[in-house]
Image 1 (cartoon, rainbow, N blue to C red):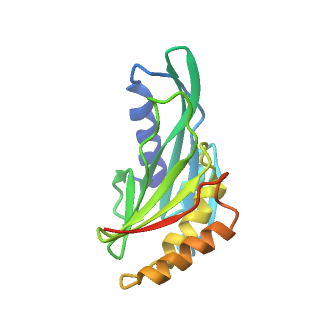
Image 2: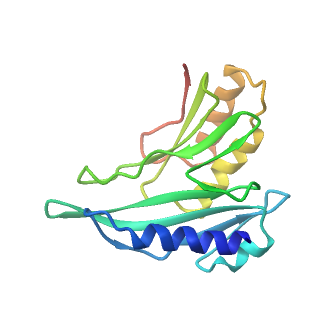
Length: 176
């Protein structure tokens, strides 16, 4: 099955099983990453025909009591062809934190890159954009198997200087 067909199946599966708090789904954003790590995005899945990795952002609106807000699901389809909420490279895993549906407001989201011992947390604004994915992917591609905590802190600073940090939330490195 092609990336395009897998992505369409993921969107169909997620949007057909609507939890109680979710009131509606928005138009999915399909992000294709090719072998040269060039990132393309569209609201149509056809760009995935020339991609080796797919990222799917599915926006949704949720309600808590009487207040509505928006958040997003983020899914990856890697070279193994298996849709997941994370993607792995050289022992490192990239994933986003769980979408918020309990609080009144989503203040920010976080991309989490970890190998079990070290963790890099990269905050984004509440509505993740293709530009956010591009910034985070650039950082993820720079991580090697034997990276040190100091090099990881350098990547956190690099992300901060990419203008990817919302408000007063800054990237952090955690040693587990």
